[in-house]
Amino acid sequence: MELTYALRSNGAVRGFTADAVSDATVAAVLDDARFAPSGGNRQPWRVAVVKDPAVRATMADLMRPVWYEYMGASAAGKRAFAFGKSIDAAPVEVPNALIDDISAVPVVLAVAADLREIAIMDGNVTNRPPVVGGASIYPFCWSVLLAARAHGLGGVMTTFLSRAEAHAAPVLGLPADHALVATLFLGVPTHQNTKLRRNPVESFATVDRFDGPAFTA
Ligand SMILES: Cc1cc2nc3c(=O)[nH]c(=O)nc-3n(C[C@H](O)[C@H](O)[C@H](O)COP(=O)(O)O)c2cc1C
Image (cartoon, rainbow, N blue to C red; front, side, top):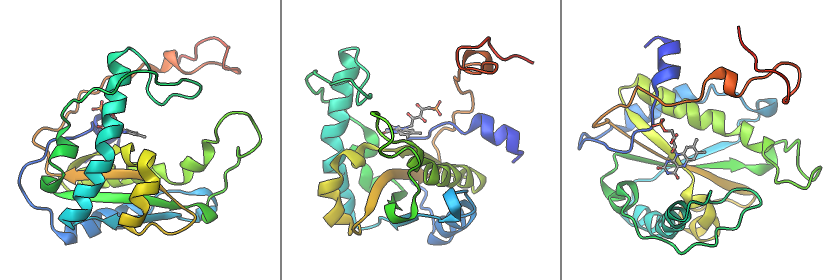
């Protein structure tokens, strides 16, 4: 697939056919994704390919209340989990196929990052939460999703489980000094959304300063 097309059309996939995905395909996807960049090339990613139905069920049980919290905030017109905002809204119980039918998802990958290998350049230097550390792990996650597409799969990154990391850690055998950064769901898409809604360049790019004039060609 042509790279520009892939970049512009790799929409989130949350519905999968019953087709199984072989370990060979999962291994091939990870083998492509490992070429992702990371600070100092420290490659801090660790991946658990979660097959055990009991482990998956526990993951789902931990994700569900977070999803309800998110939906509660959305229903109240609030931005859930945003910096400086408390949720202050009752959870709303909305079904979520990824969570409720986790046993049927062809591939579930828990992704962790080894914090000892990440340079958190903005750690403890401002009053805001550090974000730069994520740059050493999320390109890998995105590469998994792009590589999956190249192998005829689709998928979605989710971060529900990070809110329940303390409870998920023993279930997944998360080592000390590691963060649970994402759960990736992959499979053969029932539908691949290729028409993505994204803001135009002039809405986010400016000249010289962030308060400068819109950057246009
Ligand atoms: C960091 C991150 C966290 C996300 N968390 C979730 C999630 O918890 N649940 C979910 O269904 N989708 C999640 N997504 C997928 C986004 O909802 C999706 O990328 C976005 O809405 C764009 O959708 P589209 O590609 O179909 O246009 C996440 C994506 C990213 C990059």
